Length: 33
Length: 174
Image (cartoon, rainbow over all chains, first blue to last red; front, side, top):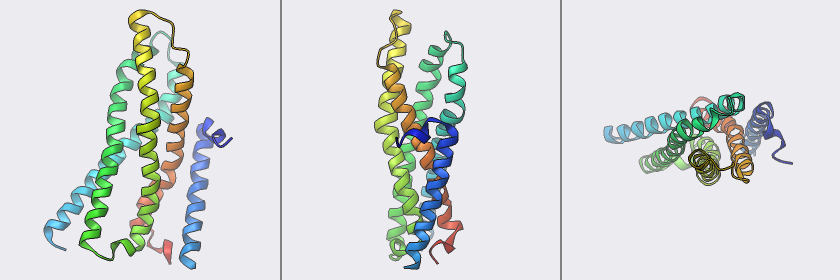
């Protein structure tokens, strides 16, 4: 199931952008603590 | 910082950037060009591509991955020795996020993509040499290598962002 987005280029890039946003938000929350 | 230390860090940085661009450039070629164009290639021409261009590009690909990792670690070790506060710095925290993603990607290259591609190349060569039918496991190897390659393409997006953000987004931690 986790591999589903990786079956297409569009899904791969979308997943990469989502991970980037999640990590940036996590870093900012971590910095604020 | 002495001039020698600065030159060392600059050389490690240069090696890291050059190897990294070579590595990710080949990765993007595989994902954005080869994966789409190869199935469209005439079936009789495909094996020639797989035993000539593919092995050579994979050679560059996996050693570029290894040297990117090596230069990056040598840079961090050097920066840590020169500046005792380096490992506490925001720059290091940002680069470490990119570094962890990069280490996962290099692992995928050496222990998933390369072993599977090696089996595919040997099987295709065997088919060319002996005229035997394609190995039954070939689609399975290709799928495993494809998913690992796609995972690396996905991870390359945050990896590149955080590598560049270490110098260009100092406000990340403030």
